[in-house]
Image (tube, rainbow over the protein chains, first blue to last red):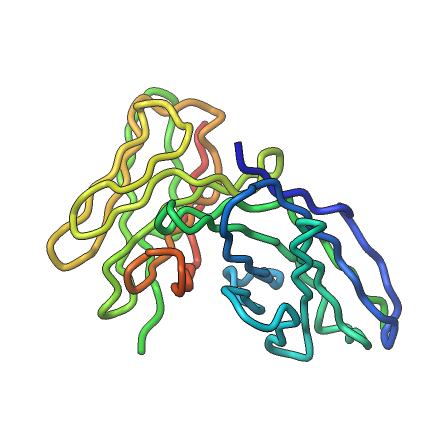
Length: 114
Length: 115
């Protein structure tokens, strides 16, 4: 069965620190990959997505992610975090032949100290 | 364009009751998916509807059901509520839900509390 694993449950950083959140998935076929963010009290929003092409994708608010097919990974990065990045981050996978079904990781809660 | 809307935003029910949640997708979107979010299990896929037909189903008991209307609006129903059904229920819409180039956009959710 498909699954998505996020390495860290809770990450605490100071402002201006660099961020990398790990995401690994298990599925051998063609996949689409997403990172969503849920700010406190707000609904899930799309940060970035990978469908095909350049494995390094850029999203909103300075976030980027790299798809490494050989490692089944899609890690999220940001060079310098801000207090406003405090939120929960979810990695999600959708396989090509399963319509709109998204499989989510457990989420990583990011706390940024001012 | 208006986003995905869900009603009601909050619900309190007692065990054994049933509940119906509603979702209006983004205008022009034909695929609607439902997810359950809990602290313990995270985000879990319930089902997806496209053109009034259920296209995908997750691993939830038959007490969870849904439907989609001709205007793409969707409802989900949970019968014989259990304490464990307390969760945030999220609806997401996409244009076609084919997965290869589509993005799902999420609503604010309905917070269901079962007492």
